[in-house]
Image: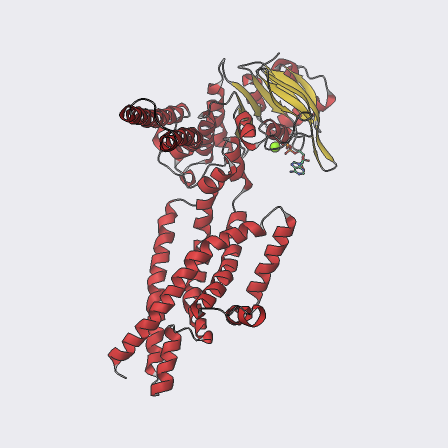
Length: 297
Length: 215
Ligand SMILES: Nc1ncnc2c1ncn2[C@@H]1O[C@H](COP(=O)(O)OP(=O)(O)O)[C@@H](O)[C@H]1O
Ligand SMILES: [Mg+2]
């Protein structure tokens, strides 16, 4: 089984069928480029993978684990959904940075909040232990017990501190990775589009998703700024990082992707290696689309 | 009546005015948020009942509401209001909560869907998204309209005199009636002016404080 297996994904909005059965698979470390004219369902597909939309039919698996199956899907509870969702990351066309947080805070917010859940559970546990003493007689010495509790608490605190430091340095590394070390304390409103998108990429990377999706990451940018973002994405390619990039940048798709999918009207019209799809397209629709794309440049 | 005596009397009224102002604000701000959630609920009956309620409260005079809250329990349910101040406070809190709820709603609805979705794909809970991402942006956006309402509230407290709560306007009016002197009215006006002046300074300071980012 491939790393990512997508099987028969369909999505309807009322009577409008936007995805009409999407199947594909992806190996770990591969980059998939999805091309196609606007309205063909590319965004909807990414949103389904990230569970911003619930597919009407179909299923997908990641690393053998079932992430979603429309048949077996009994309204998943919220925490389960969130856990599965974390396998995927999504970089939006228009960044969606949090304006009231500076660049570094944007990157650290989610890891911090996710960590908080764990810590508060541990703290609750500790309090419970303390309370239990009131109701149940202690075996062994009281002093010993309290010392143990104290030790546990100290351990928790030092772990906290360690986590905070690690997170901070991780955020700085990520910023360096996208070439924005000097912008750590800048607010999103002070950044250019290209810089904003690079922060958004760093923010998505901070959660170490198994599959990172990009929805037209350069479409909202001025032409002279697309290069810096594409360069960052190109640099992310590695054996462990699986990526899906929806893009209109054909040269980029051609040079970075291991696999290309051309979508039209909610179906995969053509798929293959970049050489196959760009060099020797079989479908008439693909040919027409590629011709038009060339015209635009 | 000497200036000092009038001052003392008006200060007494001003204390009541302040009490009404602060209590209304403290209670109506959170209640307004709850009403706002009600009027945005996806559970349609709740949504429409809330919207109808807000419509009625905003569509009728506050003075009428004060009178209603004071008399209806006694005359209709045989449970007379124990305190005039309480009656006024209830009417004010409900009235202002409804106005605030509309401001909150406008603020919340002005936040783009993308902010929620960005939070969702980062694995945050709905509560975390609201309190850690959305709320602050809403607050920044609603401070100007809220400031207007808050300044209006200061002046509206004078409506409490309609059921004989001894606030600033009522006491100054009493002085005019009893002693036949007019200037305490203007003096009372100065109290409102100074209070509102200070409030404006405070509110614009808050607005400035939140100006560290745009958007
Ligand atoms: N929430 C929605 N409700 C109804 N129709 C939608 C919704 N989202 C997308 N669509 C429709 O689905 C089709 C595919 O949209 P989309 O996935 O955004 O295409 P693409 O990203 O390829 O341009 C479009 O026709 C669009 O109008
Ligand atoms: Mg799209």
